[in-house]
Image 1 (cartoon, rainbow, N blue to C red):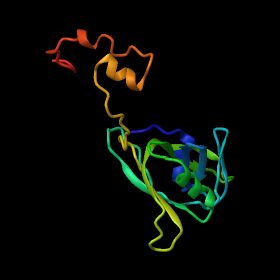
Image 2 (cartoon, helix red, strand yellow):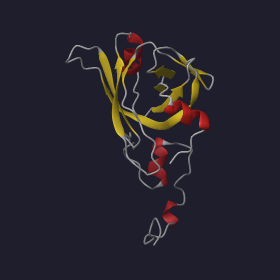
Image 3 (cartoon, helix red, strand yellow):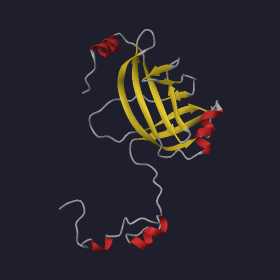
Image 4 (cartoon, one colour):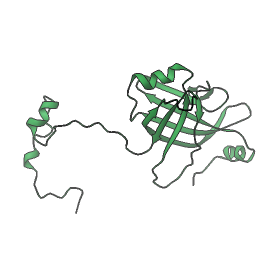
Length: 182
């Protein structure tokens, strides 16, 4: 269980608003959005409340290892976000999701949850005509590009990475070596 400060406990008891802060580390740079009705300044960063973040499920903090996947909805009414996702491959880019509690003056009292995820897929299909981008996030390994043709010999490896001696001693490994322990 997470230990909260007395200020956070009091704010929760008083029913202060809880909002989401998302930091998308995209190819073009970091974009920060919030589910709040106004911009939030937190840790010297401004999270924009431009109405682009349409839907995000509430996150909970757990001490157990768990695989978590969910979808967020971002408005495509502003062409900036659509351009971010359309013009570059954003697969495996990091997204940090924080849930924070605010005071009466809309300042952050503290963090309730902070988790990092990676983008596994996105879609701008407009089947229901709502002009939104669906972004699937997970905290598990997603799409990994592989380079075909790599073998554990120096000559084969040098075709892809010249001037490297990474596998120079591969021939010296014992063939019956058990990897990962006994």
